Image (cartoon, rainbow, N blue to C red; front, top):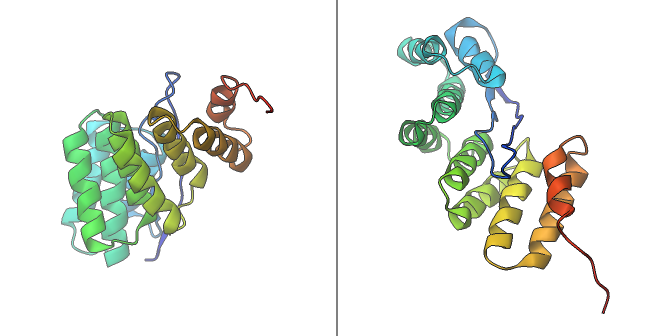
Length: 184
């Protein structure tokens, strides 16, 4: 089976990134596919996590599918509010494949939700460098970090770029409404 990446994201109205479902698709069915489907559907039920566990225990997965399943299970754990367990899955995925952009992106979301925008920005940049399927989310994370550090111009540019990349995504546009452009 070949792992393909697919990313979607949801955000809280408060303006901080909620657990993004930047899942990694495993092609071929079985428990690994069920784990991916649960991550995409944001179904963090105990059964969904158990399906991920079964997939990882099956020992019949390709290396790419093992990485993907760790990312997807991490998403489900993050959705359940278990950041420590989610971090373990993202770290396991990154140990196996340090070039897995969606693992970096989801870890960035988790770190941002934990309140560390500077580290979240660094992780989001790594996801961008590796060509994440959700660059708008990565840029949004960086914009939040820029704003928190006082770099208002960079924050504005980041929110604007995120809005351009994902025109249907409302949150960056809402953030941009707070800015007033003045010409000197």
